[in-house]
Length: 173
Image 1: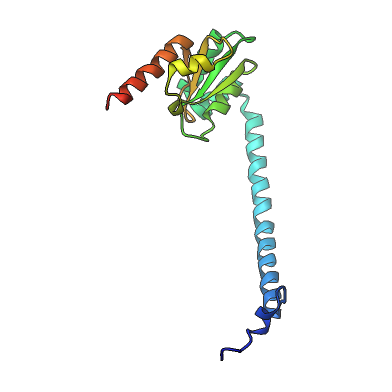
Image 2: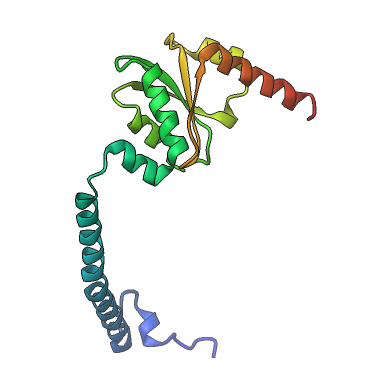
């Protein structure tokens, strides 16, 4: 049996049997059936949400409070009051990677320009950050996961906090 040839469907690369074609057609048919059932339902749901939003008559601040909570809205409003519109600030992401906190806070603080420093857990030395910062920006906004209010720091206090955390980490705590 050593010299037996493999089945014909396996013998030639690219050779297809009737069963292969039938399975492909069945898969395509099921995909079409799924789309025919899901797309109208999704469009109806999205349309209903658009109508709800249009009839809500809520301001941006009210919508933000409904989605993210009152604490987040108050924090963003306080930061907007403290940062002039033509100012820039340093942005640090303190939440889970990819949570979107930094993107939403940046959006909510627009048109103020953000200079992204990185993730909070990656910042380990205030002195190294002082040397790295080319821009002399005075404020740092630290963002967290959705719904958790961002925090505004003066740069020197933020760098002191980074150094404090690094020294606590190196002392074995």
